[in-house]
Amino acid sequence: MFKIMLIEDDESLFSEIKERLSQWSYDVYGVQDFGKVMQEYSAIQPQLVIIDIQLPQYDGFHWCRMIRAHSNVPIIFLSSRDHPTDMVMSMHLGADDFIQKPFHFDVLIAKIQATLRRVYNYNTERIELRTWRGATIEYVKNTLTHDNESVLLTKNEMFILKVLVEHKNQIVNREDLIRSLWDHEHFVSDNTLTVNVNRLRKKLEPLDLDGYIETKVGQGYMATEEAEA
Image (cartoon, rainbow, N blue to C red):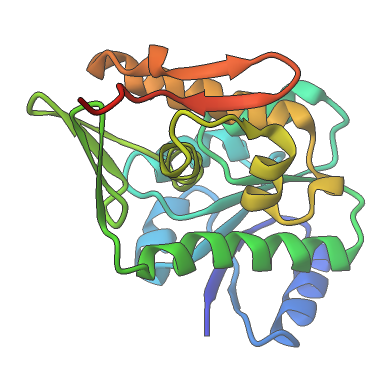
């Protein structure tokens, strides 16, 4: 049973989400003290976190930053505000998905299932290491190491890199990437993928690898690799 931490101060909505998710055999935990979210997170050790943006004391962005400083646990944001910048901000902070309120519960369930399947299934593959441009990619640890310097990637960043590297020197179109990441591309903004790729490139800058994730305008992205002699 997956443990889900739902950081939501609307008691009515919390109860409804908890009841619906319990029907799918998810174990849902709430927050007792919105000033001590990290202490409660550490005690629960959830496999997924769902965060509302508007919360007492500190907003959801604050708690996302705090969680990301310690963990790559998948995070889904909820928001009743109709601001595109909220989605962009959530992705910049390392969130895995974003759901606009009001939402249909089928959409919430689909996004939760897709996130859990993506995060916890691909890490069980036999292939744990891969090399690319002299760098070592460790899928299980979500790290990329080059010249003794390592960077830690989020689940989405690693998944994008994994797909591109496994199809190196080939264009992977945007639609295929979106389907691989979120399964239900109808509910995903095209800008969400762009933000995630840009975040990946930013992480690759210290390793001088950012220039090898190329954008193919109107098509998609490509990880380039030097041809073998």
